[in-house]
Image (cartoon, rainbow, N blue to C red):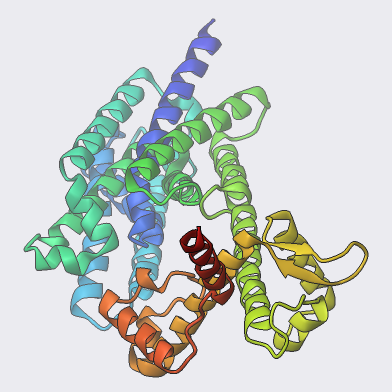
Amino acid sequence: MMLKYNTLIVLAGVSLLGASAGMVGAFAVLRKRALTGDALAHAALPGLCIAFLILRERNVAAMLLGALASGVAGIMVISALRRWTRVREDAAIGSVLTVFFGLGIVLSKYIQNLSNIGSRAGLESYIFGKTAGMTRGDVYLIVAAGLLGLVAVALLYKEFLSISFDSEFARSLGWPVYLLDLLLMSLVALAVVIGLPAVGVVLISALLIMPGAAARFWTDRLGTLLVLSGIFGFAVGLVGTWLSASLDQLPAGPIIVLSGTTLFVFSLLFGKQRGILARWIDQRRFETSLGLRHLLRIAWEHQTEGPRQAAPFSSADLLVRKTWTGPRAKQLLASAQSAGLVRPVATGNDLYELTPSGRDEALAATRGHRLWEAFLAEYPDQANSTVNLASLSIEDYVPPAVVEQLTAQLQAAGRWPEDRMRAERSRESLAEGGAR
């Protein structure tokens, strides 16, 4: 019964720790400060040892406060190096990580060699973690820290949102970007400190980084990202701890990290927003859509502007105007036929014609293509920042006045596509109505 109770305590503590660290760590991922969380975790070790040396005993609360102070000091050093020196951020992070962690290892070894101080046992658990030793008091501490982080995020949501995506805009509004960034990293430091007894200095960064990095593959909205990061962190802590309890003699910290790695790989492959599979599907759809636009444009030009107007077109006619392979042209024709845009002239041959709906789509595709061409020729300096040749509608990117100017130029040059066949049918219908 006691084992079951301890297991439940550990499951609750690590799961809540994962949720808290995941939510706060999502901001570190967005700010491209994932390695800062790792440096912060390593920077907390000297504070642990210094607190122990001051009190001459292993007082958990005092040691965690020392770790928090040391971690925040590490963040401040990184920020100062980045802001007031020419040291690059990655070099600053690497320097703080190695120096502080090296100092912590030296102090830890020094404490172990002292003969006149008791209660030294267990200090090494803060390096690699000791999840099985978690108590109800640790769970309460994790809940309190998690609520503190949640309240801070709720109160400063807009500010954190701005500095995460556009710190220059936030600075233009008069917001103290440096202080907000320091507060955000302090929340990360708090998550690190409360996680030290569970997974240790070496592995706490995984609980910070992996949930947010995994959630990034599923959404582009910050609110959803924070919720998913918390859920993913909770799940990683729960599954990792449960597996560690079920499998004998396997440490919880590394199992939790491996569980997070599994979640990250799954999100990398199948994430709805940025996963490899989703991006591959979107790329295929984009290539097919763009190919169909080119096919319709070529068919329109062949049937309305060629020497033999209204003549059917074949896959060979497509290959003359576009550097497709034969199978690619056949594939696009099949897609266009299934979409009801083209139809075969006769069964068993390679001749096609546009359907009425296909003529409408082809007319729009041709107009859009020529407007983009005219825009590139008329405004080459603006093309790099504005042009999107993959878009059918130039109106979404170019001011209406410019579109009207380009349309007039194309009409004057005789290059503006018109559906003469429809116009002739309209005139015939009007003539028949007038005769009646």
